[in-house]
Length: 236
Image (cartoon, rainbow, N blue to C red; front, top):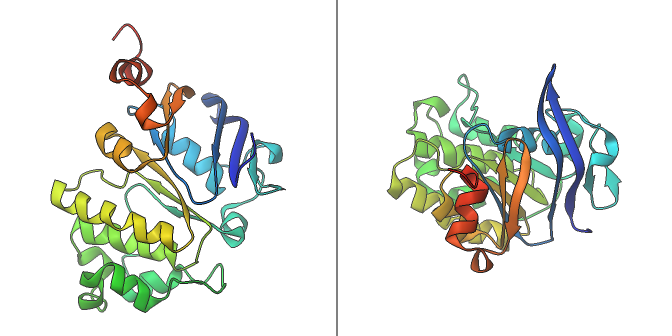
């Protein structure tokens, strides 16, 4: 299977513990793909493997025609894959604006995303730009984390648990930004426990359970029963 980004037989370990077992996914140019599954399904490990936080065999992650599975995170980001990590991971000693500017350091390339563009996307950040990043609400911190990733003008943005711990009104505002992000040229992979939210925004969905892909397809083609069985197991 070709595509902008793909994994082939991806495996991942934490010491003796194997977290991923032969995972195959692909992302086409301009797509939004959602990865769903319960806690412990392997979703975050998949994102860590793609982004270079976990190093794998080179041929297990392919970006365009490049084998990047063995590259460290800074080199993966320099090629155009940016990560919005679970928990946001802002720098506590930096202001909102300084946190955003950090995102541009590892990949200086022309593109639509500048400070002004980020502030247009999330106006509250302009108002809070001189505040410490960690002094913001959880939703505002998530906006900073997304903006920081966009500042590298990535071709692919990986979003790990965008809605985790956030109020529904905040989740709505964050997901409302996705069409503009896609219009700016970024393809998106979203990790999401909220099945309904994932199905609303994704072109295609992969469901994971215990380190394996158990279901994939377009949201309109998947039944509720199929998703339930793939998410929880057929006997749940």
